[in-house]
Length: 125
Image 1 (spheres, rainbow, N blue to C red):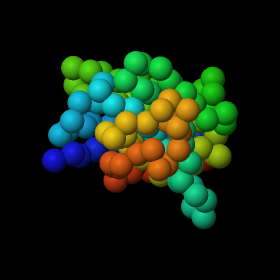
Image 2 (cartoon, one colour):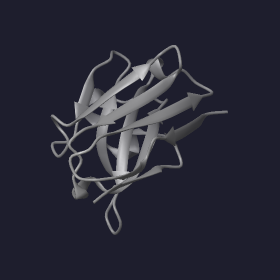
Image 3 (spheres, rainbow, N blue to C red):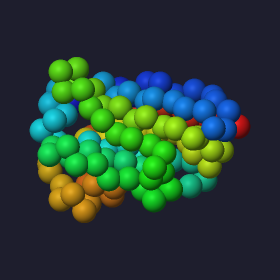
Image 4 (cartoon, helix red, strand yellow):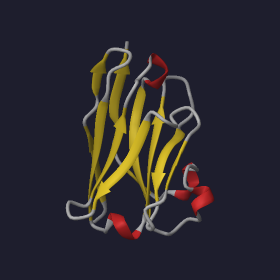
């Protein structure tokens, strides 16, 4: 049974940082491409960051230089470190797994992923 559980969201001021976690079960994260997405009110869900099974990372242009993605393979947990947060980063953040495989160029595309977490709210004021 695959499960993804995000945590670490909250309310912060502009310029501050948050670290999101995604605890995975039912599969091994390091054997799959893992992604972070976000959805702001009234907006479509968009890819933020991804890390593939070779450890390569990719980021949306809007977060490059501010966000980093990593994973603890012993804990089967994915992380998203978010620095320099702005009000434009306010959204529900979702963790996702592409257990059917995806080419790296598709790592920020919604339809590359087949499992999703429930999301965690990030609010920046």
